Length: 162
Image (cartoon, rainbow, N blue to C red):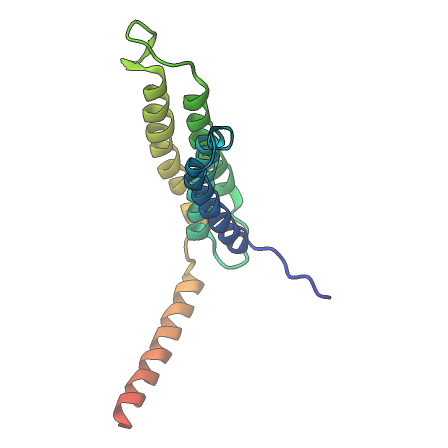
């Protein structure tokens, strides 16, 4: 039996499928007794970042090439988002007199700043630093242009023969 090499794209597709199934299971847990239903928010807190990161990897994957240096910022975003959601679930309930972080109740601050704002700064920087290594080279562009020119000629001949 020959074993095919696992590429970032196949791993990302698996992540999208698993994340989507996890999200569906988290929603479905609401229909079960409280002992099972308690797991729903935690499952959602893990499944959403898995699906999100897998989609990002799917967009960044170029054939069978590894992601290179881009894997570290993607992993950081996964930790920020997944950890932020889990932290918001694990923090004690907020009170009116309770502590505020940067003007917000703790849970809201974790979700807004940790899950929403920090990845907003990490991902553009990661893209900027890996732009030259991950974008198409001049040879790749020449190949794409040649393939497009060949495809355009094929399209023209197919319409002329009608």
